[in-house]
Image (cartoon, rainbow, N blue to C red; front, side, top):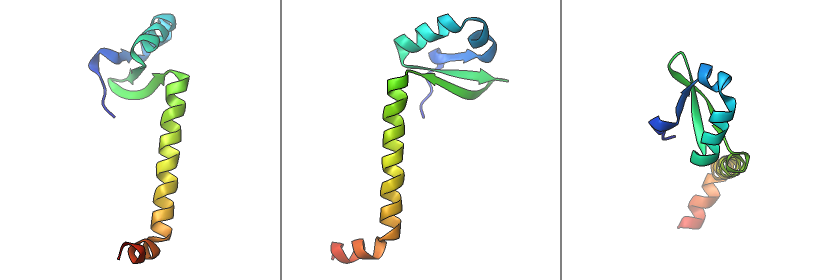
Length: 78
């Protein structure tokens, strides 16, 4: 995951200025929230999160199928 430094905010700032952070998410797509100067949370638009989750789920399923049936895929590749 690439983190744009302009989208880093402290957990204190996120807590005290949530409306400002929400507007930043609306404009930039996501914000990384730091706790003790370490990335801890990502706040993103709901629809963008859904797309990422779908891609991640498809990748997991594809890996499971390939792993389970690797011998069959090797035979088909011949």
